[in-house]
Length: 169
Ligand SMILES: CC(C)(COP(=O)(O)OP(=O)(O)OC[C@H]1O[C@@H](n2cnc3c(N)ncnc32)[C@H](O)[C@@H]1OP(=O)(O)O)[C@@H](O)C(=O)NCCC(=O)NCCS
Image 1 (cartoon, rainbow, N blue to C red):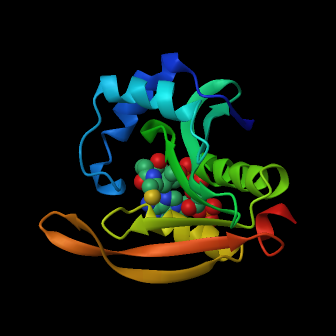
Image 2: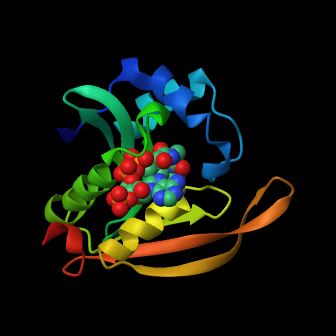
């Protein structure tokens, strides 16, 4: 069973190892060091008012991380981010983690919109397009969002809206 729970400091080196395998995915082009990873855990995960961060667990085993960041509480909007253990991708974990994070967003945090962006240089855009369409998101391309492999790439933007998101009903 897939569940969300608190992130643990002891899982940060594992998370960093996964994260640094997908440099094409992230907004920040700089590789993360282990010191920065612990700083992120100590200063952002437990203290940031604009973010909520969860570990993804399969029968209690740490298999991924999902987050809502850049939350603007006045507007009820937050941006989703996700990573799944590379050795366990393609088994439905990512889809379920997103569903559980959306459920948190709309039913507990009382957000109105969960949005996200995925660069087309990252094959994960196919994942987001799949679940975006399945669950009734608004989707649109965005121009020139990331420089990767010596060229500029567009991105897929998607947003789910409370009351219209099919994964909860
Ligand atoms: C993107 C990611 C989170 C997907 O997680 P996952 O657990 O592998 O995805 P799932 O197994 O839940 O896939 C859900 C659906 O998307 C489809 N899908 C997933 N990745 C896909 C890909 N690369 N190409 C085409 N379809 C894909 C699956 O076939 C599945 O379809 P189905 O539900 O109809 O069977 C994972 O690949 C990952 O961690 N990537 C690296 C980090 C990253 O890029 N994060 C996103 C940054 S924007």
